[in-house]
Amino acid sequence: MGQTGEQLATERNGSLPPVDVAACAALAQRGLLFSYWAHRQPELTAIHSARGDRTFGELNANANRVLAVMRQCGLSAGSRVAVLCGNIPEFVEVMLACQRGGLRFTPINWHLAPDEIAYIVRDSGADALVVDAPFAEKLSSTDLSPLGCRLAVGETMPGFRSYASALEEHSGTDPVDAALGGTMLYTSGTTGRPKGVIKPAGPPMMPLREGSTFGYRDGDVNLLCGPAYHGGPMAFDLLFPLSSGAAIVMMERFEPEKALALIATHRVTHTHMVATMFQRLLALSEQARGRHDLSSLRMLIHGAAPTPPAVKRAMIDWLGPILWEYYAATEIATRINITSEEWLRKPGSVGKLPIESGATILDDEDAPCPVGVTGRICFPNTNLSARYHNAPDKNGEVFGSAYFTIGDIGYVDEDGYLFLTGRSAETIISGGVNIYPQEVDNVLMLHPAVQQSCTVGVPDDEWGEAVRGVVALAPGYAPSPAIETELIEFARGRVAHYKVPRRIDFVGAIAESAAGKVLRSHVRDEYWRENDRAI
Image 1 (spheres, rainbow, N blue to C red):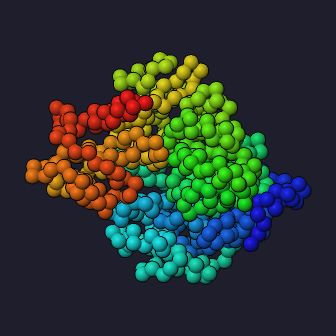
Image 2: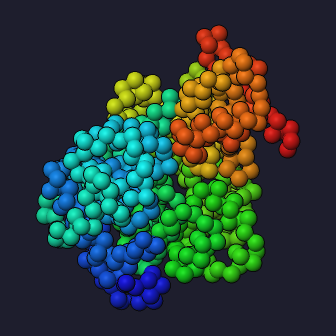
Image 3: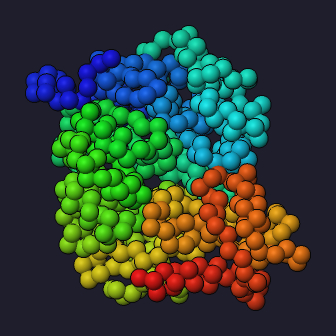
């Protein structure tokens, strides 16, 4: 179905008209930028996936059909659409429909437990829900009655219309009254409740073609190997390439050698990964790595979690200086980044702190830190800053002063380059995913054997940090492998699997402040001191 990126690349000289920037700008204002590419190159393959391919024309037409279905259900500009889907073409179709229908798109992490998913559907005020049938059991706690539009992709689900059948009833023509939509991603807070992050509308996405940082060309192909619901992959592996006329290869789950095979087969030019993926790729044998031609790859974007310098250097030695690292978060409007060439001069840095934006390093008294002195990485709180949906108390706590922080600490050197040195004790970052320990504590404390719980992140060679439970048992209970297993299984049934402690250590008592607050940093620091001594 359609041509591959390699076929297009061989024909791009003279085979397609030059990009009409003015036309792109006009369409982007209405959320229809992708339709420009659909009409320019309708027969070329836009998505390659195990669950079906789409040409640019088909993808655009289906996005229009999704929008028509939702309007038929009563949705209009400002309505909210939640999506619980894996890395499948339908995820993209719904995303593009929201983009051109003035709708707010909220993808849901399908790793979450049913209660967590139900909370996001309710809190987001979703008017529509699109579900990938394999995740049907995840909706056991969700009240579907407020949802005026419910679509199931794949198998039939009670209470849901068939996605494919619903689309068949509508034309695939572009809407004449298109309006630019938006996205609300959910992140977690230290209280354990997910929070929707609302960002002020910025300028619409424009093509990131030659001359830009990403430099997409005709025939380029982007590999999606992380979860599409996550902000990084959704931006770098879907929005950026699709807005620039590039094709997408979708992996449903990351498998290291399969990723290399897909890069070679589809002549992939761009992809986004996290440090854990690097470690799994580097763990492959030289023979396995060498059997795949990766010469097409021009840009390997990475972020979400710090990458150990030795790992990053090994990736650059293998693939060349094509790594482009970023430091960002859902709440932050500014993205910090660093090229391979810069990083080799400043190993360990994540890029220059953009002081022109007001970003700074502050100490505990909110005074600026001198060069080389560690403090909180802070960003100015302006009318362009993000806000949390339905969370006035949290907004006051995080955004109630001149600066806000997401909990990272670091310093800048004499040249202004930022180095991360740690994170607040409340945040565990494992494999590029934020985990908030209070949420895990809240679950463990439900077990009668637990008197006090203090979940922390401990050093882990593969994941950066691993979740470790530290528990003081209630009277009448004694530490044993059996009670450890029981507590882990107890947590597994109540939170997403990646939040479950891999191990639980038992202590006589957990340090608390005079006010009765668990001193998590004291507990965490002991594990990191042990790691430092081992090194």
